[in-house]
Length: 246
Ligand SMILES: [Zn+2]
Image (cartoon, rainbow, N blue to C red; front, side):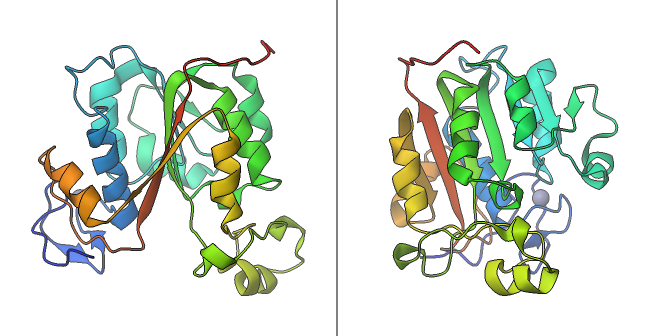
């Protein structure tokens, strides 16, 4: 089920769209669903219990950064290894902008460091095994902390196993053929759901069903130009963790 006649962008209020991109803030469907998911869990409300939280936003999303900074303040950490994104999004914000090279640089953070980690269309760009990357990201989440994220799923993901190793292909043409984009190293299949459920927490799919639509209506969020293929995932780390301290 999709909504096609929404009136405005839920991030910035703009009413004009080019294709599915907001003409003002540049957000696409997945960014607007990400934003409404953040709102659903209370992260956009200064009066909730989320005071003094530490948030890592990897590959910051158009439109969302300024709003989140105004709410979270100095605990908001941005990261993007590619400098062009750095320049586009964050040159004027007085907060840490890290150029983490993933996956190795996740290791600089101690266990249980962040209350919230946000990444949208990031994991498919990271060389290596996605299970290792998810494990590391969950490690640096605090107990009860949450990861809100998006990965592109294979069209027939229910019957497809994840394909990795795009970093070892010798040409962009091969990566486009196998993974759909010249800088995608993996294509996610059904095992993504199996593997994330093995991690220490609860996994939830925020998709654009009638049920989700109802749940976000309660938060007075206007959702625009979403389609049923837009999906956001949430992972909430268990309160009881038994991890090493290094
Ligand atoms: Zn907008």
